[in-house]
Image 1 (cartoon, rainbow, N blue to C red):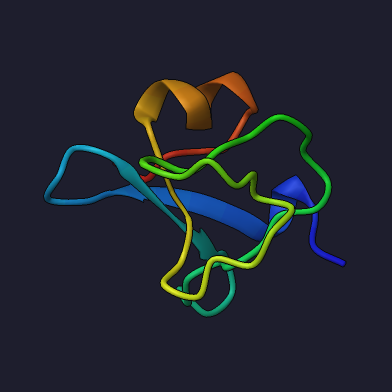
Image 2: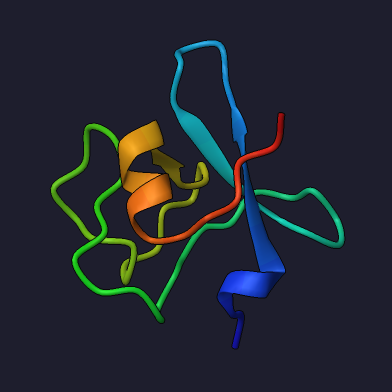
Length: 70
């Protein structure tokens, strides 16, 4: 199971944040440990699998404490 320390965010070309694994830089497809978190343009929370990776708004990522890469 991953924790907040295992993930980080990187701002993408759309101005949103791609959520990635700290160790590998690979896309995160599911986050079970944060409730009420919804990817951009999705009505399914991060508790569901998102095969193309999770993309959050900057505000959403900061709200739950995800560190965003500069």
